Length: 118
Image 1 (spheres, rainbow, N blue to C red):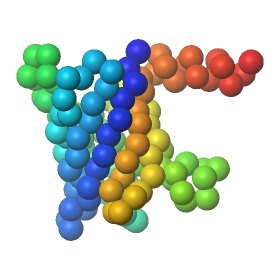
Image 2 (cartoon, one colour; image 1 turned 135 degrees about the horizontal axis):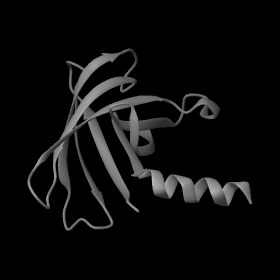
Image 3 (cartoon, rainbow, N blue to C red; image 1 turned 90 degrees about the horizontal axis):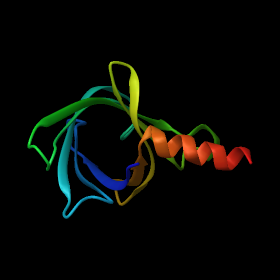
Image 4 (cartoon, rainbow, N blue to C red; image 1 turned 30 degrees about the vertical axis):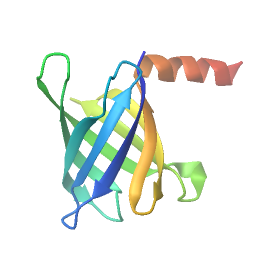
């Protein structure tokens, strides 16, 4: 299970730059995301790329950011996908023009949903 945190800043051209870490990290890792299509600040679809610390390989996923439906535009939901398959989920909010949030993998998502159902 992976449980981590991130922040993104948005450039004038709409791309994202930020960092992330999780429970296995010893430091923050940079991540960038190129805007594919989008509307409001941060809302859109991106090609997100980062380098894995373990083997140095680059990882690219499609990142989709939208409003969490029940949040009245206050909380954003994020989904990272490869070939249409969910790899990570996240939630965040904007503070001083920076998107700050947390993310987790499908295994943790499943466990959280099981707890809600009880």
